[in-house]
Image (cartoon, rainbow, N blue to C red; front, side, top):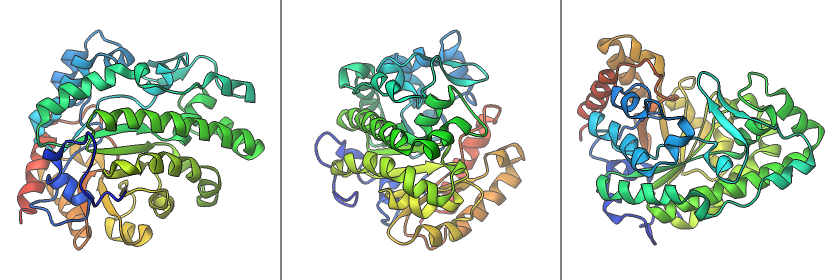
Length: 355
């Protein structure tokens, strides 16, 4: 089903005519919609307050806390969409993988995946494994009303890299060694992760997500030929599995300028663009029939209001004439960002693009 048709099933119809979903569908909008990756996070003092003393993974499993954190940037910044507060490793934790998110490091896997026997550790994800997600969505959709809620999941390549490396990496040497050295095991691992990711997104769609975003945070480490051969099939499987819900599917990665066309080819309705490629060049690489999302450099927000607005205007100028554009950063909000700078940026984009 195309994202250009009205959503069916449990999708909230009151969000259908929102500026965000109209832009995703490449329809005329009253203003350019804005939301920020990592908008619900450490840049907000209210977030730091409610998270105090609570571990990251624990906070992702408490529906009341998830709902509160997800709503905080909507209340403060008046963004055009909320994104479900979670972490990309939540579905792996839910099926029993021994991992933790260590402060200052990130996700750490106790026993990294290295052999075919490790596949047995990746069982199917069921809705009961993540019942807290369904409960949190119920709280959120009741509160958000006409504001769309974006579902969240990590893409198979990035999840595989965490599992194989055992944590964050700069070189991805172990993941790439498996990809090049044992392509059959690699393909089986990514296929299994595609099923888990699709199941996690399906739970969110059944609970009322208005759109979904697939984050392939580490895909920029790949050459296009390797991405097409070894990664695209799994991402395409995820995006195809949720296609029948008829909601926009967003695909984003960091450092993926050379992969933009392939990420769209994987099945995205909206391709996220980081700050390295201007949007007018990105649209050439992606090709017709896709909306674009992005792409202000997150560090610009430290430069003062005048500089932020000037750089935002450059992004908007590069997006002039696009069929659909959602204003966002080229990556997530950085922890030390002034929250008021984000509020001012939303207001600026809304004001200068009002139609």
